[in-house]
Length: 192
Image (cartoon, rainbow, N blue to C red; front, side, top):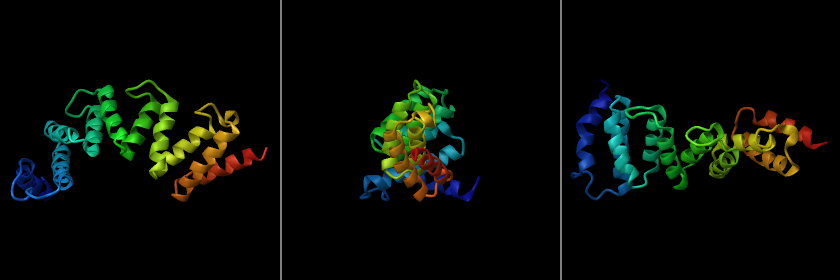
């Protein structure tokens, strides 16, 4: 067992239940420490214990805990794999404005994992994440619009291509691989 894991096991259990350290600390600091404890337990494959901590944090609308719970259910770690339950947690995180939750929910809709495949819902959540600066969401949204939701480049409307250029330009500015190439392709198409 690594030294850091030992330190976490020795000192963090006291923090969860409250002691001199947590007295007077703001709730975000306490939740961050609890999240670290849960993460340490997760890394040691103590999924049940990590899940219990994340469930307590999820009750406080801690979006990181919600995403971690979603991942446990998606992967079936310490619980039976349940994609619908994973979506419940992702949706809560996304609705709280967490960019990671928004992106992961968008990908679930795009792939049809735990929900019916719905590219318009995927685009809705991608746009929310893209507006918060998520460069991968910017790229994916740009591609989705440029291809008319997967129907093909030649089927997209001028409005869709214009929006696609906007998002792909942002992705390119954020050094997303392939964004520049896609922009060149789109600009060549838009000339005709």
